[in-house]
Length: 163
Image 1 (cartoon, helix red, strand yellow):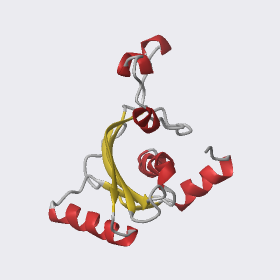
Image 2: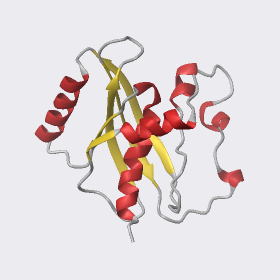
Image 3: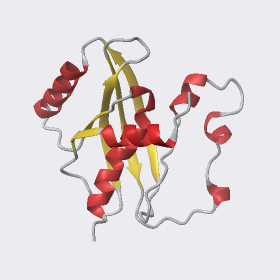
Image 4: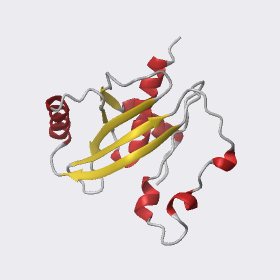
Protein backbone atom coordinates (compact mmCIF):
# COMPACT_ATOMS: atom_id res chain seq x y z
CA UNK A 1 0.00 0.00 0.00
CA UNK A 2 1.51 3.30 -1.03
CA UNK A 3 0.65 6.66 0.44
CA UNK A 4 -0.55 9.71 -1.37
CA UNK A 5 1.37 12.91 -0.67
CA UNK A 6 -1.56 14.15 1.47
CA UNK A 7 -1.66 10.94 3.53
CA UNK A 8 2.07 11.20 4.11
CA UNK A 9 1.68 14.86 5.12
CA UNK A 10 -1.10 13.91 7.56
CA UNK A 11 1.14 11.31 9.26
CA UNK A 12 3.99 13.83 9.38
CA UNK A 13 1.79 16.58 10.84
CA UNK A 14 0.07 14.30 13.38
CA UNK A 15 3.29 12.80 14.71
CA UNK A 16 3.96 13.82 18.30
CA UNK A 17 7.53 14.29 19.45
CA UNK A 18 7.06 13.80 23.19
CA UNK A 19 10.70 13.91 24.19
CA UNK A 20 13.77 15.31 22.51
CA UNK A 21 17.44 14.75 23.29
CA UNK A 22 18.80 17.37 25.68
CA UNK A 23 22.43 16.34 25.37
CA UNK A 24 24.74 15.22 22.59
CA UNK A 25 23.63 17.69 19.92
CA UNK A 26 26.68 19.05 18.14
CA UNK A 27 26.10 21.39 15.23
CA UNK A 28 25.96 19.26 12.13
CA UNK A 29 26.47 15.83 13.70
CA UNK A 30 24.12 13.83 15.88
CA UNK A 31 23.58 10.34 17.05
CA UNK A 32 19.88 10.37 17.78
CA UNK A 33 18.53 7.36 19.66
CA UNK A 34 14.75 7.14 19.54
CA UNK A 35 11.74 5.08 20.53
CA UNK A 36 8.79 5.37 18.16
CA UNK A 37 5.43 4.05 19.38
CA UNK A 38 2.17 3.62 17.51
CA UNK A 39 -0.93 1.47 17.25
CA UNK A 40 -0.14 -2.07 16.07
CA UNK A 41 -2.21 -2.36 12.89
CA UNK A 42 -0.85 -5.81 12.02
CA UNK A 43 -2.39 -7.43 15.09
CA UNK A 44 -5.29 -5.04 15.59
CA UNK A 45 -4.41 -4.38 19.24
CA UNK A 46 -1.42 -3.38 21.32
CA UNK A 47 1.48 -1.19 20.34
CA UNK A 48 4.29 -1.40 17.81
CA UNK A 49 7.57 -0.18 19.32
CA UNK A 50 10.46 0.75 17.04
CA UNK A 51 13.79 1.60 18.64
CA UNK A 52 16.88 2.69 16.79
CA UNK A 53 19.60 5.23 16.26
CA UNK A 54 19.82 7.80 13.52
CA UNK A 55 23.25 9.06 12.47
CA UNK A 56 23.15 12.59 11.08
CA UNK A 57 26.32 13.57 9.23
CA UNK A 58 28.33 16.78 9.41
CA UNK A 59 26.69 19.70 7.65
CA UNK A 60 28.73 19.48 4.50
CA UNK A 61 29.34 16.12 2.88
CA UNK A 62 30.55 15.59 -0.68
CA UNK A 63 30.42 11.98 -1.76
CA UNK A 64 30.53 10.89 -5.39
CA UNK A 65 27.60 8.66 -6.34
CA UNK A 66 29.89 5.78 -7.27
CA UNK A 67 31.20 5.62 -3.67
CA UNK A 68 27.76 5.03 -2.14
CA UNK A 69 27.25 1.37 -1.24
CA UNK A 70 24.53 -0.46 -3.11
CA UNK A 71 21.98 -2.75 -1.48
CA UNK A 72 23.79 -5.76 -2.96
CA UNK A 73 27.13 -4.63 -1.48
CA UNK A 74 25.61 -4.42 1.98
CA UNK A 75 23.30 -7.45 2.02
CA UNK A 76 24.39 -9.57 -0.94
CA UNK A 77 22.30 -10.55 -3.93
CA UNK A 78 21.22 -14.07 -2.94
CA UNK A 79 18.42 -14.99 -0.57
CA UNK A 80 17.20 -11.45 0.07
CA UNK A 81 15.01 -11.42 3.17
CA UNK A 82 11.77 -9.50 2.58
CA UNK A 83 11.67 -8.43 6.25
CA UNK A 84 15.04 -6.72 5.88
CA UNK A 85 13.98 -5.04 2.64
CA UNK A 86 10.86 -3.73 4.36
CA UNK A 87 12.92 -2.15 7.11
CA UNK A 88 15.37 -0.31 4.87
CA UNK A 89 14.45 3.31 4.56
CA UNK A 90 15.92 6.63 3.66
CA UNK A 91 14.83 10.11 4.45
CA UNK A 92 13.36 12.48 1.92
CA UNK A 93 15.83 15.16 2.85
CA UNK A 94 15.53 18.50 4.45
CA UNK A 95 15.37 21.60 2.35
CA UNK A 96 18.44 23.82 2.76
CA UNK A 97 19.94 21.34 5.23
CA UNK A 98 22.97 19.61 3.70
CA UNK A 99 23.01 16.53 5.92
CA UNK A 100 23.12 12.81 5.39
CA UNK A 101 21.03 10.49 7.58
CA UNK A 102 21.21 6.75 8.08
CA UNK A 103 19.43 4.37 10.41
CA UNK A 104 21.26 1.91 12.63
CA UNK A 105 20.43 -0.62 15.35
CA UNK A 106 16.78 -0.96 14.38
CA UNK A 107 14.56 -3.07 16.67
CA UNK A 108 10.86 -3.64 15.97
CA UNK A 109 8.70 -5.19 18.69
CA UNK A 110 4.99 -5.89 19.13
CA UNK A 111 3.86 -5.03 22.66
CA UNK A 112 0.56 -6.27 24.15
CA UNK A 113 -0.09 -3.15 26.25
CA UNK A 114 -2.00 -0.16 24.94
CA UNK A 115 -0.37 2.92 23.44
CA UNK A 116 -0.80 5.12 26.53
CA UNK A 117 0.68 2.47 28.83
CA UNK A 118 3.57 1.90 26.41
CA UNK A 119 4.35 5.62 26.28
CA UNK A 120 4.28 5.87 30.09
CA UNK A 121 6.49 2.80 30.48
CA UNK A 122 9.08 4.09 28.00
CA UNK A 123 9.16 7.54 29.61
CA UNK A 124 9.50 5.95 33.07
CA UNK A 125 12.32 3.65 31.89
CA UNK A 126 14.24 6.57 30.36
CA UNK A 127 13.78 8.64 33.54
CA UNK A 128 14.96 5.76 35.76
CA UNK A 129 18.09 5.36 33.63
CA UNK A 130 18.58 9.15 33.55
CA UNK A 131 18.70 8.93 29.76
CA UNK A 132 18.66 12.45 28.32
CA UNK A 133 19.69 11.54 24.78
CA UNK A 134 16.76 9.37 23.61
CA UNK A 135 13.76 10.87 21.85
CA UNK A 136 10.23 9.51 22.16
CA UNK A 137 7.88 9.74 19.20
CA UNK A 138 4.23 8.74 18.83
CA UNK A 139 3.18 7.95 15.28
CA UNK A 140 -0.45 7.94 14.17
CA UNK A 141 0.23 4.99 11.84
CA UNK A 142 2.99 2.57 12.84
CA UNK A 143 3.06 1.00 9.37
CA UNK A 144 4.71 4.21 8.16
CA UNK A 145 6.92 4.94 11.17
CA UNK A 146 9.79 6.27 8.96
CA UNK A 147 7.63 9.34 8.23
CA UNK A 148 7.33 10.00 11.96
CA UNK A 149 11.05 9.47 12.50
CA UNK A 150 11.70 11.98 9.74
CA UNK A 151 9.51 14.46 11.64
CA UNK A 152 11.65 13.82 14.75
CA UNK A 153 14.87 14.52 12.83
CA UNK A 154 13.31 17.56 11.17
CA UNK A 155 12.37 19.17 14.49
CA UNK A 156 15.93 18.84 15.74
CA UNK A 157 17.47 20.14 12.50
CA UNK A 158 15.08 23.09 12.40
CA UNK A 159 16.27 24.20 15.84
CA UNK A 160 19.90 23.62 14.94
CA UNK A 161 19.86 25.56 11.68
CA UNK A 162 17.56 28.33 12.86
CA UNK A 163 19.17 31.59 11.75
